[in-house]
Amino acid sequence: MLDLMLGGSPFVTSLGEVHRLNSDAILNTAPCTCGQPILSCPFWNEVEEHVIANQSGSVTGRPLENMDMMIRKDDCRGLCNALERIVLLLGSQWIYEQWHRLLAPAGHKQALVNSFIWYDAVRETSGRPVVVDSSKDARRLGLLYRHAQMTGADIRLVFLVRDGRGVAASAMRREGIPMATAAKQWAQVVRKTQLTLKSIGTDNYLTVKYEDLCTDTQNELERICAHLGIPYNPQMQVLDKSNAHIIGGNPMRFRKAETVIKRDEGWRKHLSANELREFKDIAGTEATLLGYTV
Ligand SMILES: [Zn+2]
Image (cartoon, rainbow, N blue to C red; front, side, top):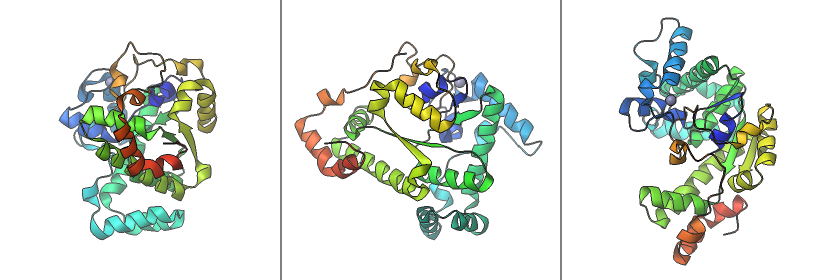
């Protein structure tokens, strides 16, 4: 939803979980928000042409198929994995840069370089200066942040949180999993993201609550816009999906008629007392840390 809101600004292009661009394009498992398979989407085809032009002859094949932005576990296992984790947790830019120069796995370095190549091409295609990447991968977030500090790229972070009971209820419905699994998954994502953000420093990101965004929309959007350095635009309160080319994410992005911001509190009706208790036992600590009373 925040993707769509931000994409309503004439300064922003929202890309959604764009680290899935290549795998979704190749496997054709999920279309672009415009409804087209990614390989035939006019927007992504134009972005791809900019990528090819900017790489001046060094590209072989289709970038939509082979210029991956995903941080893959297979590229960094065992000791490499442990070291990369420590380097990020230490939160030292100098140590990160030594790691990047001497030991970082080639696949991860390439995914970071590719990410910024795609962001630049999106900016050229859209004529909009800000690109929003809402890929859900805490390690990639940490690596992108450090990489941007190293190269001088301007990167601004927004930590969007939601009551875990709402997130768990959606996962249970969508994936057919029990509360125990959904609560564990949510708590794990929160822990990993908080560790990454801690290493980045509290002054360097903005926390926004989904519930506040739905009920105090203008104030929250103004706060986000100030953080991003762009003017607030009332059009951001209309969830216009007609021009969006978002990758992955909530199925709501395809429901073109749904243009009004609505706080989804369905979990209050759908979760049983037992399930709520289970959530509290498993993920209560993480929920409390985010400011929710469970
Ligand atoms: Zn599209």
